[in-house]
Image (spheres, rainbow over the protein chains, first blue to last red):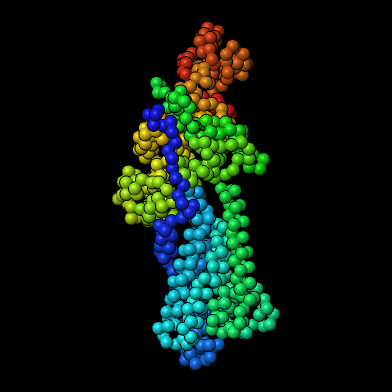
Length: 264
Length: 312
């Protein structure tokens, strides 16, 4: 017995800070198991697309940029779905902190950065599903008209641009340790979508509100996603909007995360 | 008690790296000093009870051993490494009071997820089997009883075959039988040379299951040794007698006798804690009307109270 205990076994540290596809797979499975998340991410955005008249005769025959208004609405609600999916995945950190699961994970080799990366990837997968559903409805209904390349570009931008909301979700997740954080974020996202020109074009707002709207976090991703349909030149303001908000939310998340680990 | 310290043997064999080495470890929360310049070395293979009343600084110390919080002063090393490094190598795991589980995963998924985070683990199926979780492997954690969840936490902690297992009040909320089974499993496991450190405020647990007891109070180690050694540290006996009409002046006289540590009156019963119980007994029986005299040696509980100074 004494001989056996004299040496410490040579154990490896897991590569990539403990990042693993098993963990990612289980995270995605958890998201898909959550009925409320499914309603928010997979049902509400296409439902809103239909309710706002996305497939209506009027919008099919109304021109918007290189396509019709149906295309405009489809892209907008894909962005909305992507926003919610990303926020929900990021904000799941709040639930895990409230349950003490974050503390449990700190007893494993999992590096906090690998944990955050898994959350962001989960957000991206859920966002992709949400965008795909709205686009599929648009495609199969035959109502949406725009050039083939615009379909691809707008879908990719709606998907990837929503990363700003993964950062937003993480920030809120580390800020509010609550199991019911999405109840707070649902209305907040609807407000941001309204202010960001996702639900209605910004033209309908007053001049002051229009200017203000361009500084809100949903404006950038919405404008960029629709650029393939309506813009003739690069919308620099929208790019700056996405970059700055992503940086701000990410910095906020890291700041709160640091305080969190100093305390627990 | 005839058992020897495995750690002492390892030391004799050429001093292996200690499992835990704490030096001047200090943690303050505002004005409160939770851990006060604590020094402690735990050798590999020891089963150590970290015993103390609530608020003694047990959990704060464990947090620093696991790298969950940073000491304000002093150092903590686990197998000669920084705590977080030892955790990353899978050398130390723990079952904590505060560690939570995800309600929306099944038992098997929880173990599978945990296994995915370590470089080296036992097979998931084997771990489930050994923890008696196979039958409920497909059950959601939310639907598991408290005892089942605790078994799951234990299975997760043993998964990477850690060299050091830390348990913070592991049997809180378990019934007597569950507690016995739990400790049976821990002891069986420790036979293979694993170091086990458990925090507890149950004296019986420390007495029955630990090779060594480290008694902490107000963030400091106040006694350290086998249960027998600790009992001996606060040596002396308790002399009890019935003395009708005994009053404060008589108590003061008793207190002044050589070797008397404490005198307590409970109605007509007088209780004297003394190193030299014989002379107290002689005094009581020859010079006072005291009768029904009893002499008992003090147990671990008395030692606990005397050493932690929380008996008044």
